[in-house]
Amino acid sequence: MVSEQHSDAPTAVIGAGLAGLAAALDLAEAGREVVLFERRPYPGGKAYSFSDPRHEVVLDNGQHITMRCCTAFQDWIERIGCADIVRYQSDLEVAVIDPEARGRRVSVLSGAAAGGLRRLGLSRLPAPFHLAPSLIGYEHLSIGEKARLGLALQPIRRMGEAERLALDSQSFAEWLRAHHQSERAIERFWDLIVLPTCNDRSAEVSAAQAIFVFQRGFSRDVDDANIGLFRRGLGEVAETAMRRLCERGVRVESHTTVRGIEMRDSRAAAVRYGREERIEVGAVVSALPPQAAHDLIPADWRSREPFWRLAQHEVSPIVNVHMQWDRSVMSREFVAVLDADAQFVFNRSQIHGWATPPHWISVSLSGAHDLVDLPQPEIVERVERALRRSLPRTDGATLLAARVVKEESATFRPKPGMHAHRVGPRTPITNLALAGAWTATDWPATMESAVRSGHAAAQALINGGESES
Image (cartoon, rainbow, N blue to C red):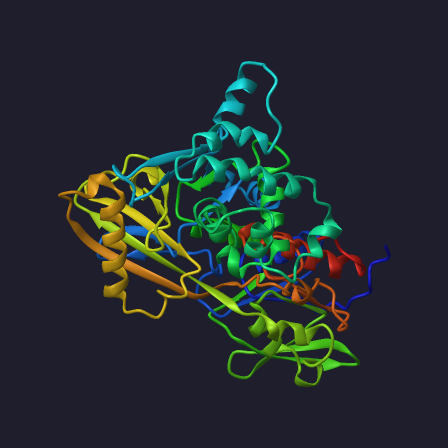
C-alpha cells in the first residue's frame, strides 16, 4: 500500500494505557514524531500499580493475568524488554472451591494429563479434549451435567466465524440452554471462564463474544489456556514501555488533559490540551475509553458513522480487595471460588516472593455490579466472610488490613448486539485512528485486545489503508 502523505507535525497519541503505549511505540519506530498525552500522572490505564505507604508494599489496582494464547501482549512485552515479569503454568491448572460443599470441596480443572503425555513423547488428546480427564473428575457438577458439556463444547469447536458472529444478538446463557446446559452448569463451569474474561456473566455476555473466548483459549492448542501470573507489580510493564518511548524521542505530556481536536478540511489539524495549550498535529490516535473518545470528537462529527457507536457502549465494574493476614491462609498461588463474594483469590505473597508473615492475598471480583456502590467496610466484610467459608486456613487467622480498589468502568460490557458498535481503527477523519480494548479486535476487554488495537491504529496511519486487528 502507498503510505499516506503526512506533514512534519507530530502524531498525537491520546491516552497512555496499553493501547496508546503500543500505538506510540509502533509510530515512533516507523519514524514518526510522537507526542503522548495522559491525563493521569502515571501510564498504564486500567493496568497500574500503586504503593501502599502504610504497609510498604506495591499493589496492582487489580489482579491481572494473561494466557499463552495472548500472543500480541507476550510479543509486546518481549519487545519492550520485560517479558520475564510473566511466569506461565507448564499446564493449565485451576483449583475450584465449593464453600457450600462438605469439607469445602476442591476440584481441579487441568490440562496436566495432556502435558504429561507430551513430555513422555506420547500422542496427546487435541484441544479441547485434553481437558476431558479433569472434567470427568470435576465434582462441582453431576454426572449428567458433565456428560452434557460436550453438547456445547463440540459445536463451539466446529463453529465458523460467520456462524459465531451471527449469534451476537443472543446471550451466551441462551445459547447454552439451547445446547442442553443446566443453570447449575452455567454457574459452576461456563461462568467460571466467562466472568473473569468478559467481566460479566453468561446471561449478560453475547454468545459471539463468549464463544470466541472458548475457541481461542481452549479449542486450538493444549497450551493456549495456560495462565501467566505477574511476578512483579504490573505497573512495571507501562513504566518499561515509557522508557522505550523516551529512548525513541517520544514527547510525553503526563498529568495533561486533552480538551479538543481542531479540524481543517476533514482532517485533524491540532490538539488543544492543558489550560490553553495547542499543538499542530499530522495525525491523531485516540486511545481512550469509548465514551471519552466520543466526547473528544468534534461535535459536528459525533452523530456520523462510526462515531455515534462509541456512545452506545456500557461499562462493567471490577472490585479488587487486597488483604493482609497474620499468617498464610492459602497454599496455592490462586484459586477460583464458587461464591460471588470471592470468585478468584490470588496468593500475592507467594506469587511475588514476599516474606511472610504478614501474608497478602488479592480477591478479584468481576462483573461486580452489586458491590461497586457499597461502602468499602461492607465490601471487606462480605469478602472476608466468603473467604472464611472457602479457605480452611483462615480458621483462627486474623485479618490485619484491607484495601479496596474499585474500577467502576473497568471494561466495556460485551452485551448481546454490541459487536456492531466495536469499530475498527480507521475513521472518516482520514488522519484520526481509534484504539482501545473496546475496538474491533474480536477479543474481550483484555490487555491482549488493548495491545492489538494499538498496533492496528498505528498501522492504519502508517499504511494509509486497511489494517489488521
